[in-house]
Image 1 (spheres, rainbow, N blue to C red):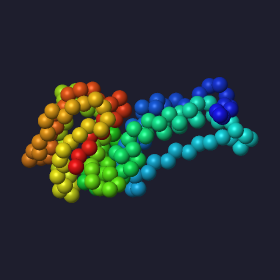
Image 2 (cartoon, rainbow, N blue to C red; image 1 turned 90 degrees about the horizontal axis):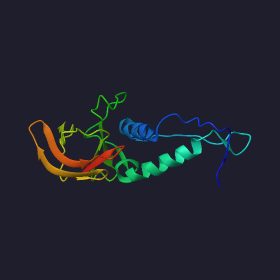
Image 3 (cartoon, helix red, strand yellow; image 1 turned 180 degrees about the vertical axis):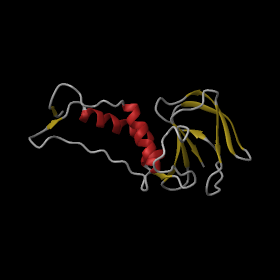
Image 4 (cartoon, one colour; image 1 turned 135 degrees about the vertical axis):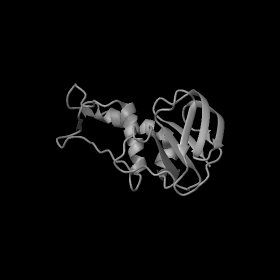
Length: 168
């Protein structure tokens, strides 16, 4: 059963892709790794602002694609995201650690068009091995540790929202 809608014009003016990227990124720099959205019907009954219920439902569905790398993860201590920083300042990348601490997840909102991704060494000295694309349609064609960090090459099509690469 669908909720009644207060008016015909949608109050939602942010694209689903933008709010997904915002949610995923902010989860990486939160102390607890949590992001909370709240909305509900008005007090006079089962009335929602136009588009909000459907939007939040679609957001929940899209976030489920990132279960292990986001919903079952916490901000990375190896590659922490500084509070107050932006996606652009972080080269459109951020890290999460699986809740069992078995995996590190590199989230790439934008991948370089030349197929080469480089990043520095971790803060705690962990060694990243066995990269595997979790989202997107990319194939990792090369991976190596360098003096200053890591270098990975890939081919294929990135995910439309967030390409996730898992490391052991």
